[in-house]
Image 1 (cartoon, one colour):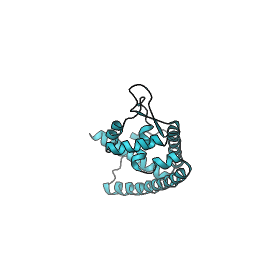
Image 2 (tube, helix red, strand yellow):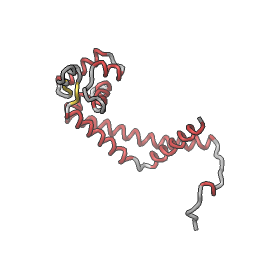
Image 3 (cartoon, one colour):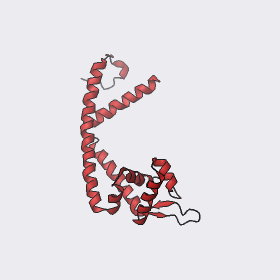
Image 4 (cartoon, one colour):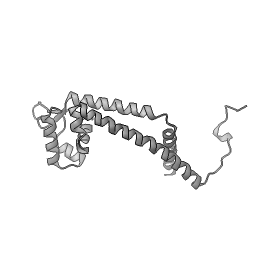
Length: 171
């Protein structure tokens, strides 16, 4: 019969070589990589579908820079909105390029100007943009939940947690 009330100190420690640890790590990493690449490919196919169904998705998913703007406009803490200068600094993108992108997004109705006095240079997200942000968050969580029980993912996450904790304790 197995004793259920053993503590970690009740077990004998057996050192494992770095070679064995590295082999175990490589196997776990390969399993995680397989599941992660499948998730990324699913995201690719889903994005193709979103682009066909929704003009906002089509516009924002057309480039990494536009996608970054989509993410920025979904952040909280910008009650007045976003200016060209703010976005240029935050994203490290040339001011003129940001200005063109924001003007185009505005002309398409994805963002709008703040109408408050002295705030007209600020852009605010449309409800459509915010709903798409909400949808993406739900989609992302569903992808994680659908894949979290793959043992390859769980093992590598657990390994990385141990690795981090060990590094923190060694500082």
